[in-house]
Length: 445
Ligand code: PEP
Ligand code: MN
Image (cartoon, rainbow, N blue to C red; front, side, top):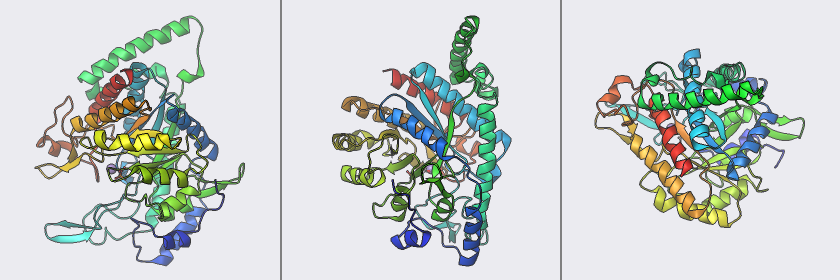
């Protein structure tokens, strides 16, 4: 691992995809300078702990559950929103751990997920064309010329919003809320009455009995009282990520201290691009998305550049092929990467290859396609004798209607009922729990 982080000018000279054009370079520089003085949001030692867990995933000894919004928003930094999201992630983890009988690594897609790559730089509505929304980190969602101008003061807002979110998450996971004895209290209100909620209640009852037994024999392990939970986001905006990169005094190594795990998106994984060059210089556990156009040679070259020491836990390949393509496309990738002796964790993003526009005008996904892609991912890995290491899902703890199907049978008309996502459609709380049960079954097979 290199200890020198290329400077920003060098990275921009290399060429970085998906970056905003700020109108005022001076204002940008001032905000970046301020950001460089801010305390770390996460610690290098915590990143190393997560890397050790991801090494277990890469060896087939644990399963990754990574989830959260496609795009967090500043307005979404409320106690209710963060708690609801965390609660469903904890429920999903319980289902996977108990019904799937596997240790689960819990990773939030939160506290930093504010910048979005876009397939088009511009957006047209009713004959008006404006710059696309690139996430609250860059510009405003409101469709006005003023709001869509990139504003560098938002970089500090990202820091503050991430700090507030992470602070709350840390309080929840260490302060008793994540205690396994609370397993019933996570199953509240509308979820409790759903089929998935009732199945969950059965598991919670069994866990209660096991806990009562342990208590009766005098066993009271610390592991019951808290969970390990880490944060992740796509490290897209070089200004922000670079400013949040620090040299760890213990090891003289650079870490991105804005999140424990950061990943490179499908649109920024160019082998000779600035993102790969930046990611090479940090020691965090990292991910790289691989879509249907990625060849095995691309994947091998990326692994050699991003993880030259072939360190287990360092690199995760997050595949996002689409339900219709994964069974044909994934085997060659996995086979050749494995044959090359590359140590990697394989994770399935069953969301981004399955997006389409509904007849009612909403960006959506079918729950069945999401499940089918995860099943294809399991089938391919099972056939090759490799480990299906986890899932990355876009989900929320609220009762939204953004994805079609699931037990509540949301249809195209029903999307209008409560569609709140500013970018991609998320599984709602019941759909997330249903997915966890289905994945648990796949783990048992
Ligand atoms: C995302 O994870 O929201 C995303 C944009 O994914 P991808 O880079 O795979 O398109
Ligand atoms: Mn998305």
